[in-house]
Length: 374
Image 1 (cartoon, helix red, strand yellow):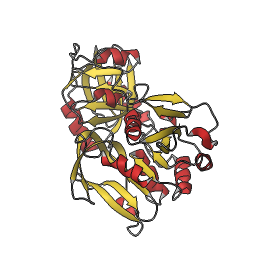
Image 2 (image 1 turned 180 degrees about the vertical axis):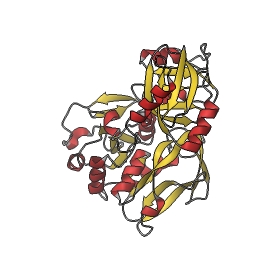
Image 3 (image 1 turned 90 degrees about the vertical axis):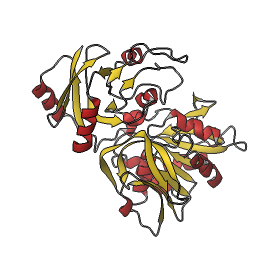
Image 4 (image 1 turned 180 degrees about the horizontal axis):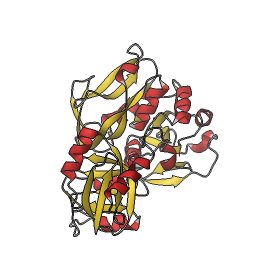
C-alpha cells in the first residue's frame, strides 16, 4: 500500500506500508544496529519517535515474547528499507508485521533509508508525518509543522509505572503494600536492596541488576525522597527514559535531596537527571546517538568500549565543576560526555546502555561497581 513520509522541512519520501492503511506522527530518528529490532521497538526511550533502521533487511528472524524491553511497543512507527515477510528462526512466534499490527503500529518499507538517514544527519532529527490516506506532500508537511516539539515535553511520566513492583526471576511482581514501610525488602541480607526509579526502565537493566545480586523495587518516577528514605534501601538506581530531562523537575528535585544518602547509579536519562540535580546543564543533540556500535573511551582505564546507545539529549561537559566531578567516559565520535562520578558523593552515571550487550560485555563491570559501592 502506497505511503508518504513528510518531514517538517518539506522533504518527502515515497514508500509503502506493510501493515495496512493508517497514519502516524512523531520525531523521526535513525538507529544503526544490524539486529535487535524487537528490543528497539519496545524500548521506552523511543516514546513518541518514528525509528528508521539503517540496516537494509529487517524482520528476517521474526519476533518472540522473550526479546522485549517493556510490556508494549513504544515507537510510533517503524521504517525499513526491505521487510522480510517470511522469517526463519527457531525462536520466532510471529512475523514483525503481525507484531506491529497487533498493537496498531505502522510499519513502512521500500523507503530510501540511506537518503533519509543522510538527510537527518545533515538537517537534524525533526518532526514528521506518515500517511497512506493523505498523499498530498504540502498537507503532510503542514501537519508536521503543527506538531509539538520533543524538547520541553515530560515523556517520562507517560512511560513510568504507576504501580510499584518487584523484579524477581526475570519478571515483574506487583507490590501491593505501603512504600513507606521498610519491610518491603524480603530478601535483605542475601541481596542488596535497590530502589529503581522508573523513567522508562528497560527489562534487561533489571535483569542485570538482579544478576549482580540486587533485590529491586521499581517505583514511579514521581516517588518522593521521603518515601525512599522510609524504605531504607542500600542503593538507588536512576533508569533510562525518553525525551528531554529538563521538564522532569520533580525527579531532579528528589534526586538532589537524596545526594549523599545512599550510593546512586544512573543510566541514560538517569545520567542526565543526575547531571541536572548536581547543577549541570543539558542540551539537545543534532540527531542523537542510536545504535549498537558507538565507541566510548573509559578515561579511568584508557580502554575503548563499544557501546549501545539511545538518546537525543546530553549533559554539557563544561557545566560540571571539575573540582566536584571526575569525567570518566567520552564519546569518540563527537567528544560528548558519556560518564562521570562525583568526587565526594557515592554517585556515578553513564549515558550509554551497559545492559544492551555492547561489545558484547564491554560495560558489564558497571553493575558490579554499583554493588561494590553499596
